[in-house]
Image (cartoon, rainbow, N blue to C red; front, side, top):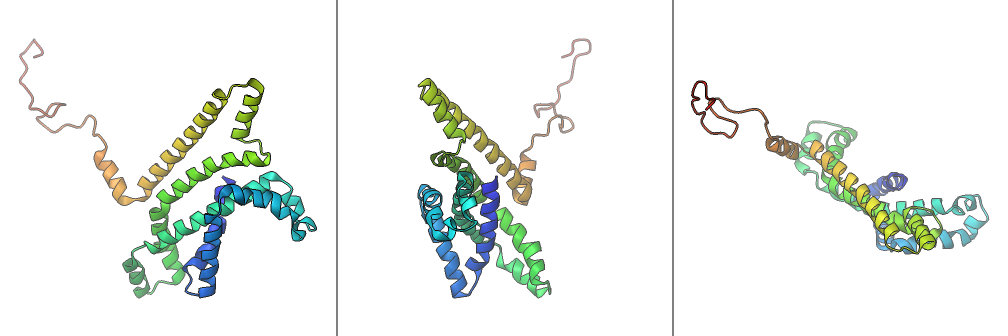
Length: 235
C-alpha cells in the first residue's frame, strides 16, 4: 500500500507538468514518464539498490542512512515505476472529461479551483478508475521481485521453504494462490467502486437485480396466470 500511496503522490506532482502548455514543464513530464515507465523494473531496482548508494552525494551524506535499507530502495523503485504509469492514467482521464461541462462551468463564473474540485476531479476519478485498478494489480505482482534485494517477502519465504524441503511445487503453488486471492479481492473492490461511482453502471445493476417475492397481480411466481384451486384438494 505504501507503494501505491507514494506512487500517487509523485504522479500528482508530475501531472501538472504533463498538462502544462509550457514546453519546458511538459518536456520534464514527458521525460519522467519515458524513463520510469520505460525502464525495466528489475533494472530500476538494481540501479537504486546497488548504484545510487555509490554516488558521493549519497554515500557521504545523510542519504546513505536511507539507501542502505533494502525496503526503502524497493519502495522507491516501485513507487517511481508506478508513478510513471499513474501519470499517464491521470492525464488521460483528465483529458477525457467532457469539455462542454468545463466550458459551461467557466461560463457560469465558477472559479478554477471549483471547476477542478467539482467537475474535473470527480469525472477523472470515475474515468480512470479501471486503469488505476490494473495498476494496483501490477504493483501487487511486482512486489515479488523485492526478494532479489534480500527482502523477505512472499516469494522469498516460498524460496526458503523450497531450500529446506527440496519441494519446488508446493511453496510456489501456495504463494501463487495467495497472490490470486489478493488480486481477486482488489479486482472485486475496484469493480464495486466503479459501479458506485458510475451512474450508468449503477442503474444497470439496479435493473438487473432480481426482485424476489414481487409478482404482478394475477400472476404466479413463474409469471403465469393463476389457476383456480379446487376446494379441499389444494389444486
